[in-house]
Length: 467
Ligand code: PFF
Image 1 (cartoon, protein in one colour):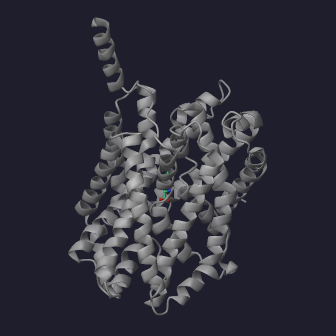
Image 2 (image 1 turned 180 degrees about the vertical axis):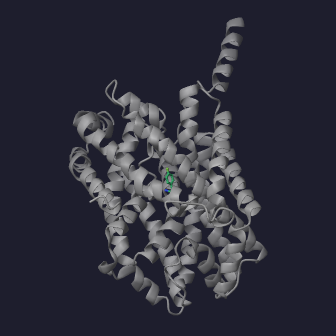
């Protein structure tokens, strides 16, 4: 009896110190939904439309889809495979699967840096989204005059206390869910929220597509004009493919480490990619027809969502309801993605230093608040502070999507194709021989070894004007 009590006491303290059996996703469906939750985010509703609008519509989308299939998907499969094989955080998974003494774990470490840089600007935009969802309820952001909506957006982004307040609120919201754990926090939340996001997006889409004059927007999305494609546009499309699928920085290694043994990785990754592309296209169909119908500019860039959308909704019957639905769905999308970004350092801190999950989360959030403040203030207080001609916000964004994520993905593919080798890949992707997907695996291996690395290198060097 005494022993039992002692054992119980030991078990509790082990659990408290985070040394117990690793938390993981509880169901196969949960794996899929949480991973889609990571991929789907502001990337679909804010970045994809603004980049598509700025870079010529359909032609950009075609290049982006190609990058997603030839680069994003192979990197995602690689990450899931490494994570599930090692069942550790990104840094330690790579350390475990790599030959002794070779520094492949640096990909994971660089990924940690990317996680902080992305989250710093991502939480700023998510802060604006949360603010707009709230202000939508009070009706204070709606106006049919874009000059007024532009002024509204300007007064939010230039108010230091407001942007910091909303950014911190977002960080706390994400932190609370992360502390609840992988299955009880991330999985449960995304399972509840993702279907809601999809339904809300469909409603907004139908509204937009049934406006008079919606046809021009559809044409913009479907009729390619290849004259706009330059090296830097192709790099932007590839950067978006990395950002969209949350790859190149260890997020998918971390999530892969929570996958079930019997999860079919190539199938799961393909479903995630297709779901993510569909949501982006739906977001395009929700936004562009309405933008054209009311004669607004498509190349507004990052402010498209915050200046154009409220004006568009104010111009339609029931707009005050639709605008709230739209920003609530965007807040939902942002939440699933942020959970996966924050999970990267939290998994590392708990795995490497046996930190309690709560403490690891608090430490991560404090660091994020420090790094995020200059990004949040980039449109007001710090708008004149630039490095290489970019504000802190733009620099974080550019450095991650267009440099760090592609480099991370490049080295990961080189590792999988040239170092880890076919045998290990086959073992991981057949679930130790239980799946008969030999042809898929051979195809994947060929792509990851010979196609993805030169493609990423070429686009990277050309887009950065090195060649
Ligand atoms: N995929 C997310 C989006 O498109 O909004 C952003 C993202 C999440 C990027 C997680 C990177 C990451 F690790």
